Amino acid sequence: MASQDYTPFAHLTAPNAPLYRQVMRAFLVAKERFAVHLRPEDVYATLDAERRPADVEAVVKALDSLVGWGNLRADPDHARVTAVEDFYRRRFIYQLTRAGEAAEAALGTYDEVLGRRGELQAVALHDIVTQLRALLVIASEDETDPAKAYVALSVLTARFTDLADNARAFMGSLQRTIDLHDIEVEAFLAYKDRLIQYLERFIQDLITLGGRIALLIGELEDQGRVGPMLRLAAAREAADAAPEDAEQAEAVAYEKWAGRWSGLAQWFVSAEGRESQARLLRGRALGSIPQLLAVVRQLNERRAGRSDRSADFRVLARWFAQAPDDAARHRLWRVAFGLYSSRHLTVDADTLAERTAKPEPAATAWGEARPLRISPQLRRTGSYERRGKPRRVADRGEAKRRLAEIAARQAGEAKEARDRLATGGPMRLSRLGELDPLAFQLFLRLLGDALATWRPGMTTTVATSGDGSMEIRLTALDDGSTAEVHTPDGVFSGPDHLIDIIDLTAAVSVPRQGASLRPSSQFAEDR
Image 1 (spheres, rainbow, N blue to C red):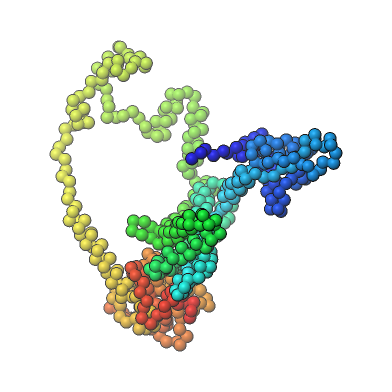
Image 2: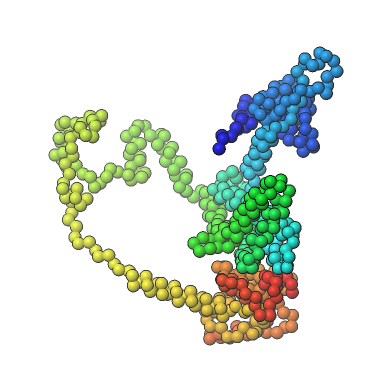
């Protein structure tokens, strides 16, 4: 591959870099107005009055330099020639080159990324759910409409890209906030409560909607309709390619669409040995809340005058700077850090007397110096003391087997509880029947997750368990009936509701008896 020419970026490090940036920005503004050529006086007029040079000649020199770097192209200006002597005058009009336009686009992206704080877009999660449902409807048609599939996939990838990019930028800015980089302490203390509420609200939306998105992706992939829709989108995207390049353009477009879908699936769906990005983001956001609180506590302690490690190190550094000589600095070092010479290497009195009588110069090489006699016992065992028989290594195989049996039994009990609670479709809470203690505990956690999302005026809510294995849909009934759930420890009673509990860990999505053929996650909205 030939080396790229990055000369169009040379104006960034030139002495008059601010003027060059203003000139290039003037050409970008003109391009947006569909103006192709600019004269020096046109460029001069568009510059900021407070920062532009005193005369137009400085702008002409800047234009010529940009032409030399390849950012601009100069053409003779024949439009203003009215006499023969005008042909001998140096008059040019200037326009952007492809290299100059590409350099400015790269600089614009650079400035945008540096200025982006990012955000956690809960609205994007709702939009992704909507587009996935639209794809399910399109995929269920007898003949898929290429235009509908292309538009739905385009909107889906655009919203997903915005979500991923903004989440990445937000978590980076959040870490800088936790580290108190690029932020004032007073500003941090002023908005930390709103920031924590913002994180908690997004985490709740991610828990609720992330499992729903993973379920919709699984339904699309189980139907085997993703590949054909991606091929339709690729064919539509490559429809305007030249005839000789049509096949290659369609293959490239399909590869691009397949990569986008793979990125979307991996972002929301976990696999064996790999956690989804949504789960990692949720864990990172959850972990940042106690970190923010710890920063607040540290700032409050510092304000209250309590000693902290950074202040102690600053005081110690000042003591080192004020020490009268190196001997005092060495004493201060030993007192502060307790670091001494190796205690396991000792020299007896005879060796010290010999070294005092015949000292070794500091420049003596190791190979030429007199050897230090070391006891064979020390050389062989690393200690003067004789060691006893080492302790036998304990065999923990039986304990590991018991732990594995306990883990397997607990996993089986959890699966039985999920199978017991899966309703197979909407049903009344009063028809749930008797539950064993483990299934009842799981039911209470699911019910608590659903009620945590309940807001005044709501009649239906959908929630996902914390581990993403179960989904519950709860709908209030207005008939005033009461439900009772019997357990070995007593009776659980309360207002009757319509519930639908789904086991999200099921390997294959099979339409349930009595349920609609539409995606089950649409139940709440369809009622």
